[in-house]
Image (tube, rainbow, N blue to C red; front, side):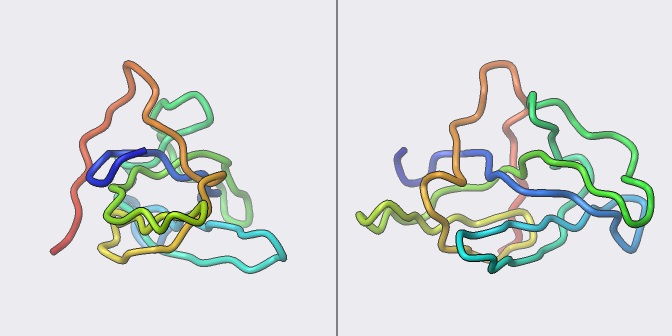
Length: 110
């Protein structure tokens, strides 16, 4: 995958603080995780479709959040900017190309 390519990042979604947002949780090998907030319309299920309604409190939904590869590190990792505006260093196994027919526009804060 090349820099500036829009990709999906594997994550789990939780209910956000507002109806228009979801919390994404990216889990790493070894049990570490990071969390961020994404607009709900950038949250996709396992098949690349928008997840729709927020998960019930205490529940989660597996899926993908879109991001843009900003740098390849050459060691099986990439720096990816996600819709919350932060850049995350992610292993390649958490990243996949956007499936054909999936919404791929990504608003990234500057």
